[in-house]
Image (cartoon, rainbow, N blue to C red; front, side, top):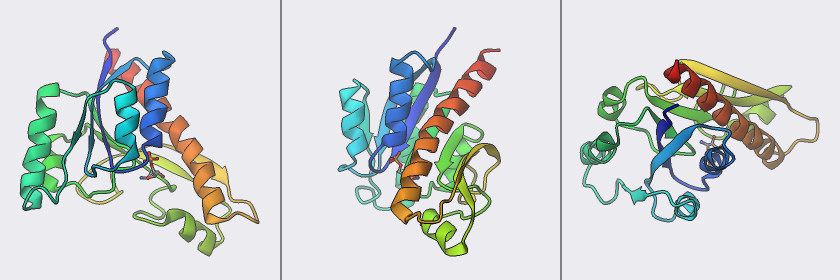
Length: 193
Ligand code: GRF
């Protein structure tokens, strides 16, 4: 069975990346992460990748004079790997349209809310402010509109009366790790069939 060929884009802690690395190591996911790209040189996720023996690259917008060049650099970097999927995992940069069009239908993102509720940032704070009784996370296809692409899967959790933003963030993050791996397992099986 051929392995799902993955490229992962990160910006920070990389806990979602780690969940995928662990699932592959534990043979829960038949995939290969060929490259981890970060737009920040200080992303802890780069260390995680290196510890797992995965190639890393930093492509920071600061380095390149404008978004157009960032776009081209990213496409040039990724293209040769012919990935089945490009995963955004805590990637905090809005991808230029040219990039999204180039890899249309292959870019997934994980977002810490039950989309279409609360696209963008500070989702846990918004859930608490709204007094929602449930929260969760979403894996969706990336389109040119922020956090608005077709939803692939969601996981839900309760919002408890004394929840703080951090408690909620932690509960949802655990769900994210499970959800992303589950989605990749399903997509891997589908690509295989
Ligand atoms: C996660 O909540 C993710 O959904 C959001 O960034 C947070 C950190 O992700 N986009 P990670 O630990 O860097 O994977």
